[in-house]
Amino acid sequence: MASGSKLVLYAALAGNLAIAATKFAAAAIAGSSAMLTEGIHSLVDTCNQGLLLYGRHRADLPPDERHPLGHGRELYFWAFVVALLIFTTGAGASVYEGIVHIRHPETIEKPWINFLVLGLAFVFEGASLMVAIREFRHTKDPAVGWWRALRDSKDPAVFVVLMEDSAALAGLVIAAIFIGLAVATGNPLWDGLGSIVIGALLIGVAILLAVESKKLLIGERARPELQRYLSEVAKSTPGVCLVNEVITVHMAPEDVIATLSLDFEDDLPLSEVEKAADAIESAVKARYPEVRRLFIRPQSRVAASAERDALHLVGATADY
Image 1 (cartoon, rainbow, N blue to C red):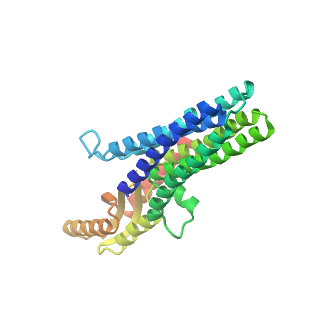
Image 2: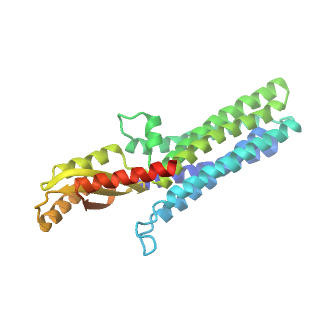
Image 3: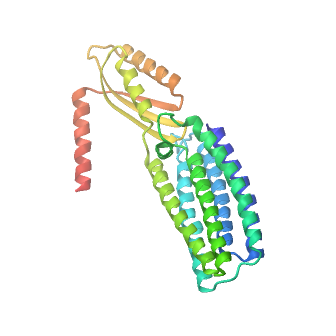
């Protein structure tokens, strides 16, 4: 999936760079505020794909002495930066340009150029979106809806491109509508209003991306079926009396750390505990290779319960 997400990013990068250059040229010739806004939008998207590629490169670095768990979360950090850029640069510039054009309206010259560029951009953006959808479908659970799967995705390289390209296609439609209104009515104020509407769209996308990236950056658990499998394998292992707790966290899209708190039989020899731990780890990694590290903690039921109560008490005190 890592190579697939890189393909998505490269396809989006190439498409947005070509589209941005075309839009800026058309805006300069035709004098359209909405088209200039769309050019800014595509340029920001191009920079975003570059940042995500850099983040994926950094995330692939091996663990070192200062980062024993690797650098996987760098990808989540850069995804959050992308959300901030969409909000500040993309949305901010769009709204500002729209306000300027409303205060100082300019008649659109050669509107056919705008519509030609919008049509070409729609084709290119659609092609990039199809690549992202194809790669996303490979990891999507068929039983889960698209929106739920998008919110549950652990790979920002894919869901950022999906949201960006979807917003870009919507932005192209908005730009075409408002440019058409400006041409039909002879009132250039519609063109500036279109920029503001596109800016509002980008604000919504930026907020959604920031929320999703923040969850991953803080540390989000693995998908439920992986958690259930960890518990089932541990329960079926000879010598295990009880599974006290299962904790998982994503360090990167394909890098999961898991911890099992297990209550073993009191008279079980240490050598048998080691064999049980090895068996659990082998079974889990054979089915879910993304579990890079699995820590097994022998712990009695009473100790585990006391620990959970203490953690809940600390959390309640912090909330208070």
